[in-house]
Length: 232
Ligand SMILES: C[S@@+](CC[C@H](N)C(=O)[O-])C[C@H]1O[C@@H](n2cnc3c(N)ncnc32)[C@H](O)[C@@H]1O
Image: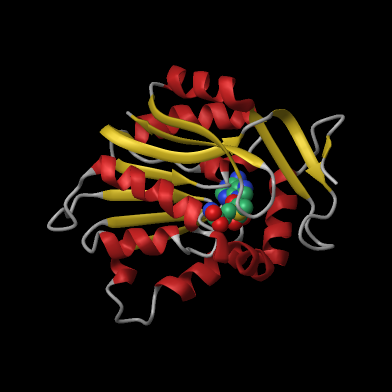
């Protein structure tokens, strides 16, 4: 059962890493058959972006909380065969699975243009104006919401002018919701969010122009998320 934490839990990142390391395979089996909603939003963002597949050698894409690299990072690699693709996840197990899913062997050209970065997305830094698209599905929701605000400010700066951000957020306002067991006995979970209105305000304050903002019931269970596409 999900409950509002009375005080902010300690060691959130360490505990989430341990949880996702433990349930990576189970999570992937559970979620991958239900990828349509994510892929629809990614597709809409790519339509806005309108970068030609080739020869756009300077295009750069980032997925935050990429999980096992499927389906989003793989789709980006396939759609933009010359672009630099960066994928980050807190779980080193998920990063290892992503490597297996995305790179077929030492000669695979993907290895030259794919950067898999393990660790906390809040610790990432990129040059200003260096990214065409940032994607974050079901991942920013795991950051304490004050960190979400700071991350949105950084993402805006990382984007090239005219670049896009596509992500989903908690539709409900919660400082910290926790669950002792989520998919498995070993996965303590933590989620946080500003809720629909304040998330949109925060995006606007960060300098993003919100193009799509829609609360949708999730396909896997009956939780609701705010799905957004925004432009710098
Ligand atoms: C619910 S899964 C979503 C995975 C994938 N984006 C998807 O749509 O299936 C959340 C992912 O975010 C990662 N994550 C959680 N907190 C993170 C953080 N602070 N930095 C980077 N990744 C994080 C988890 O390890 C996990 O792989």
